[in-house]
Structures are given as structure tokens and as C-alpha cells.
Amino acid sequence: MQKNIRLRFRLYLMILPLVIAVVLISGVFASLESRTALTRVAIRHLAFKAELLRDYFYSEWDVITQLNLDNQSGYFDAAKESFRTYAYSLLRNKTELIVVFDFQGNLVMRVGFQEVINGNLAGETVNNVTDLPDGWFTVKLFGESRAGTLFTLEPVRWRVAVTELESTYFSDVWNIQITHTVILLITIVVAIIFLSIFISHITRPMERLTETIIRITATNDLTERVKIEFADEIGTLAHQFNIMLSALQSNYREMEETSRAEKQARLLAIEREETTLYLLARVAEFRDAETGNHLKRIASLSTLFSKLLGQSEEEQKLMWYSAPLHDIGKIGIPDSILLKPGMLTEEESGKMKEHTVLGNKLLSRARSKYLIEGAEIALTHHEKWDGSGYPQGLAGEEIPLSGRIVSIVDVFDALTSIRPYKEKWNHERATDFIIEQRGRHFDPRLVDLFLENISAFRECLHSIESESESEF
Ligand SMILES: [Fe+2]
Ligand SMILES: [Fe+2]
Image (cartoon, rainbow, N blue to C red; front, side, top):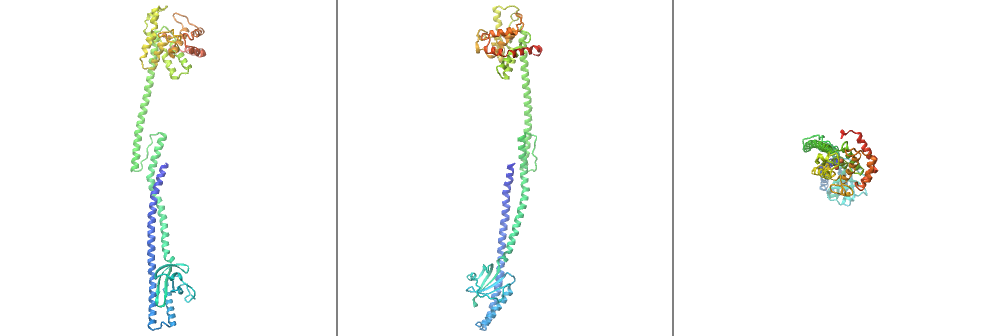
């Protein structure tokens, strides 16, 4: 918004001085021209009177000299008086003044409407005009700025100045200048009004475009469109911007649809994977002699361990889906061994132990993280902390944590369940066995964790008991 105001301001700055300069320059020229013209008129006017005065004097003086009367003072005085009267008759304005003085600057006569024709002029001087040459002059005379023309009457050694107040002559120039100033002001006001209309025609569509862009950036609302006002460059810009918005909007919609479809596909894939894992676990369960909710208990208790160890939800979920796969390898064990009611021979027992490696082989080639984790658990859930387990005889922390967890959970659950070869142990007896095997069969840290949270484990088992088997 601020940028548009600046643009508007810049346009004013560009155009307004131009308009003012044109009006001002033309005004100054007009004023100078009128002053020159008025001066010319003034000169002609006063020069004409000077001309008449000179002619009048010489025609009088010629008569006097031809009759040889020029030495008689009475005739000279009469000629002087006649000159004064004629000068007076030439006056048309109150401000006109005809001044006669000698070469020393002593005033001979002063003829004006307000002058006393025969006034006493003794002692008055006009020194500041004495040295002026004949012709046009402007000078301060009797305290006033006067313009006039000067000529000399040689026979009587007089200098005559026919003058007029400068202000009278140039009052018209002042009038012209005042009129011009008024015209200038009116022009500026009109220019500003027209400029406002003109500039807003240019800037308003741009402001609208900018506002829309700012609004879209702030709200992400791609349904907005810029209003097109004129079919000019800005109109084209707005039109192209609208086209771009439409394209963006349709792309955005497509992207949203794709993203929604992808999300659905991902959810479907997860659902399928979970279903497959569930089915796999069920397969393992069918081949096993173990009954009831064994797999559900393994999943729940292993996940509880994972949670108590402070593992992430993702890791807990991994445990939930992979722990039930620990005995998947039993599908490769012949029924004669797997379902044999009595004690196994050494050879049969060896065959039975292979379910760990078989399960690992079955799952480890998969790309699913659940199956990979399941492969690790299948291979290591019969290892013992003291290294006396199978199939690799790993000891301590060589055994993966997942295998150590499932090992303790699997044994505890086997002890507390009925099997063809043994009765059901109560929790206390099973717990005592776990304690006894601390550091031998089981990871001491996990045993401690189990004992510290024994009530949570019992609670977990209890809640599974109260649910129906079909729910798993
Ligand atoms: Fe097993
Ligand atoms: Fe098991």
C-alpha cells in the first residue's frame, strides 16, 4: 500500500512542477513584454509633449529674436510665462509634472496640477537631474520615482523635464502581474484536480492488484480474483494474474486430491500389513501346542516392557506386531515332534530347537520392519544371559534386547499356563522362578524392571483374561 502512495506522490512530483513551470515562464514573458510595451507608450507620450513644448518655445523665441527684443527682460518674462501656460495646458494627469531648471540645477519652474504657477521657487534645486543627458530617464525627483524625457533649450540655457510618476505608468504592469498570479493559482488548483483523477486512474487498478496479492498471500485463498478496470497494460497484467491464479487453484486441487489418495493408499497398506502380520501370528499359533491368548499375552507383556524401558511409540508398536512371531518357525517342525505328548528324545529336541533358525530364515528376507524385527526375535528368544541358550549360545548384551524381552515374557507365560506336560503355576511361583533365573537365563536389568512393575504386568494379564480370545 505504501509503495502505491509513493508512486502516486512521484507522479505528482513529476507532472505538477512541469505545469507550474510552464504557467510561470509564460507569465514572466508576458509580464516582461507588457512592461516593455508600456515603457514604449510612455516614452512616445512624454516625448510627444516635449516635442510640442520645444516647438512652442522656438516659435516664440524666433519672433523675439527677429524683432531684437531678446535683451529686454519684459519680453523674456512674457515668453517664460507663455511657456508655463502652454506647459500647463499640456498636462492631462494629476501626476504629470514638467520641471525646468538651469545648468546649475536651480529650479526655473515646476508645472503640475497641484503646483502654484507663480510660486516662489528660490533656493530649490534638482541637483540629481543636472548631470543626466537629454532623452529618457527614470530618477527620484522631489521624493518620488519619476520617469520622463529631458531636453535642453540652448538660447535660454534651460533644461526641461517632462515627467510622470513611475507607478502611474507601471500600475498596469502590476495589474497584469496580479492577474497572472491569480491565473497561476487557479491553474495549479485545476491541475491538481485533473492530476488526481488522472493519477488515480493509473494507480487505482495497481493498488487493487497489490491489495489482492497481499490478501492472497495472507489467506491462501486462491478463489480471489482481481477486478479488471481498463483494457490497458495493467488490465492485461490483472488478467494474466487471474489466469495464473486459476492454474494455481486447479494444480492445488489436483495436489490435494493426490495427497488424499496417497494418504488413503498408505492407510490401506498399513492395514494390509497389520492384517498379514495378524494372520502370520495366527498361523504360528495353529501349529503350536500352546493355547489360549498366548500370542496376545506375549504381544502385550513385551510391549509393556518396551514402554517401561522408555522406548518410543513406534518401537512399542514394532514390539506389538513382531513379538507374536517368535515361534513362527514351528510350522517347519514335523507334527510327530511338535505334537508329541511325552518327553522328546535328544534328537527330537535338537530338531525342535531348529524352529528358531527356521523362523529367522522365513522372516529375514522380508522388507517389512515388523518381519525383520520378528526374524531377530525368532532367532534369539531361546538364548540365555549366561550363554547357555540356543541356537548361537549368545551371552549378555550380545543377545538383542527384543530377544531378551520375549525370552522372559515367553517363559513367564508358559509357566502360568496349562501345558500337556505341566500344570499351571501361580504368579508367585512363576515370579520366584524368574528371580531365580536372574543373571542366568534372563537379563538382570529386565528382571528388576519386571519385579519393580509386577503389579502393572499382572494388571495387563488380567485385562487380557477378561477379553475374549476372538478379539485378537
Ligand atoms: Fe520358541
Ligand atoms: Fe511361545
